[in-house]
Structures are given as structure tokens and as C-alpha cells.
Length: 266
Ligand SMILES: [Zn+2]
Image 1 (cartoon, helix red, strand yellow):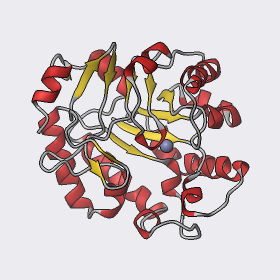
Image 2: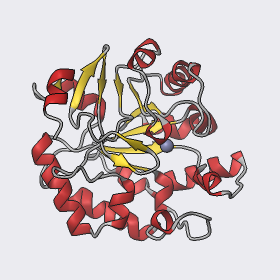
Image 3: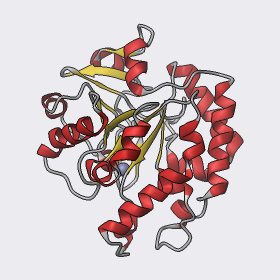
Image 4: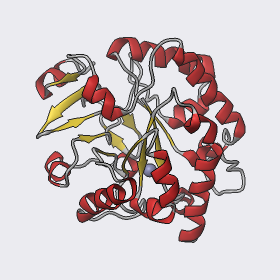
């Protein structure tokens, strides 16, 4: 499962740089345009977690992408959150794509109560990175596998088979390709699936932004080539699918009960 968070580029704000809301949206859109090859590949269906704010600005693009990919919610605005944004963002996205939206991912993988998600009309949540990210969250003891809880399914992002090294966007860009691929393959064989997440704006040249080197050093076309390499290598191992169809058609045993999920937390 290849997933992208399709959003306004508000990250530089965290590092004291100011960007207008229009600039943030425009950069998000440039990123989406730059990964066009990946999104136009009919054999690679992705899940695109989109803010309603972004979708309202570029409704035609989101509607077109919904023909080949799953559109899910990344709440309303990337920089702020109110509980009603869960429901409202789903409504906005459904109006734009004329399809039901099933999934949610919170900006910055914020923890969110299952009851809130269910009441807002979602069936799954992909906001869990089951590892420790210093300064952000410590989910080291959370399940690494999909599990049902309070009427929704939690779909954790993938972590390595040992030591739970996060296989997320920062690891992909900073680790040597062969090492990341080996960790991803091991996780794939351990868990039976792999769930990776990126942002379209990573594939733009970020050198002019006031961002830490770990974020901007490897960006742009070089990173896009690395991603294409990974996709082509994984096509030899597995099938790409959206989170929604993975949950719908997955083999029994892929989704655990809470108890099972916690028991096999290693
Ligand atoms: Zn995001």
C-alpha cells in the first residue's frame, strides 16, 4: 500500500518560515504534478489522504485521481483541527469525488479516538506509526498489525521487522536504497503487507526552504527516481493496492482483534 498525504505545504511554518495559504496550496499541487508518472501507472493504485482544504482548491484534480486511486481524508486543514473537521472533510471529499470516503489519516499522525472516527462516518484510521519518534510520539508498544477497535480498523504504517525502524518518508529518503528495501521486504514478509507513506511535495526541490537537512537534503527528482525504483522492485514481489481494497479483500488473519494485535506486538 503506497499512500501519499496530499496537502498544503505547511511544514516550513514549523521552522519559522512564513508561507501564505495560497503558496502552501500551490506547492502541494506542484508536488502532485511532479509525481504524475507514479499516479498515472495503472498497476499502482494508491491511497491519497487529502485535506478538504486542498481538494476544494483543486477539485478537478482530486476527482480525476479518484478514478484510479482511493481518496481518503487528511482532515480539513493541515495546520488546525476541530472535531467537526472529521465529518466535514469527509462530506467535502465525497461531494467532489461522488464516492464514499472510508479512511482517515490525521496530520502528523496525531492520535485520535476511535469513537470520534466511527461517528464521523469512517471505517478505518491510518494515523498510527507504531514506533518511537523522538519529540513526536511513542507508539513503540502499539500493535504493528491492522486491528479492529471500537468499530473501526486501525491500519498502522509499516515498521521494520526488528527494532521497529519506521519505514516512513524520512527513512526512505535518508537511508541507502538497498538497506531500506531490505527492511521493507522483511516487514512485508513478517506482516503480510507493507504500508508506506509519502507526501507529493517531497519530490520538489526543497533546497530554498528553511527546513532541517534531514527533510530537505534528499528531495526532488533524485528522490522520485528512488521511489520509482522501489515501486518497480516491489512489483516483482507483490501487488499494489489501496488500503480500502486491502481491508475488503485481504486474506483472513490480516486484520486482528485488539487482543491478538497487542499479543503479537514485537
Ligand atoms: Zn500531512
